[in-house]
Image 1: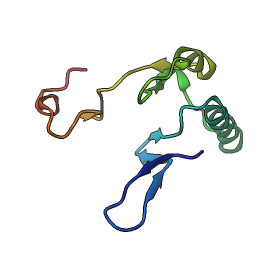
Image 2 (image 1 turned 45 degrees about the vertical axis):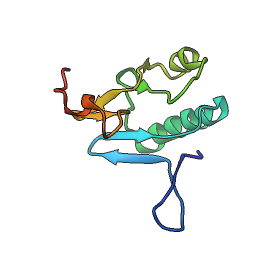
Image 3 (image 1 turned 90 degrees about the vertical axis):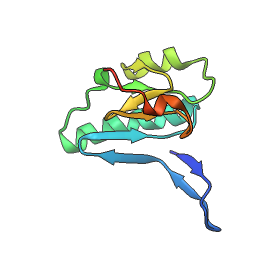
Image 4 (image 1 turned 90 degrees about the horizontal axis):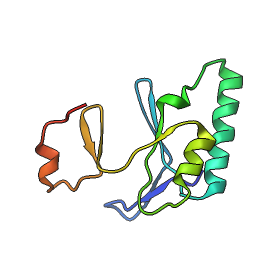
Length: 108
């Protein structure tokens, strides 16, 4: 998986493919069918090797920008689709740090 590119404040650049929080995982990849196919293979292999179950029905795909095949991919993964801005652990995702939505209460 290629991950996403983050411009660093130093001379080096950073690539992020995943973030782990307790029992949650955020995975970042390009919006290409091949990248999501690789991700699906990784998840299947993880389940087989660890004997842990990944509940994709509790997961969502959140596209950044336009991605016309998002509903097809959600069916492929067996998960839902969400959009930005959203929230994760009560924190807003996808809003500018100057946006007023950051300071509004989160209703879940």
